[in-house]
Image (cartoon, rainbow, N blue to C red; front, side):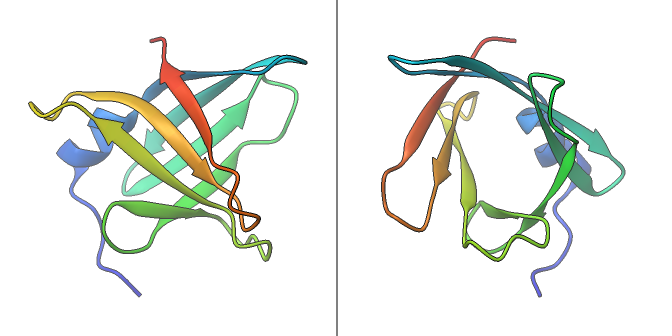
Length: 98
């Protein structure tokens, strides 16, 4: 199991991210509590912990579907998006909106 991620790094991930498709718009809100990150989707779905893996990737809690998340950043290190990596390989890119 990977070691805990530094609080300062986790803080850079906290914010809101927009998933926009032809059919829907959903806001993903990332929050932090201690060394834990959580994702809540549109306040309609329960908050889910995302756990660190390696190389800046996270997995959705006890998810057995293999879904992973990575945070996208500019060259200067500013987090500007989030990518969901489902097991089927069809990545979903979310833009940071707040």
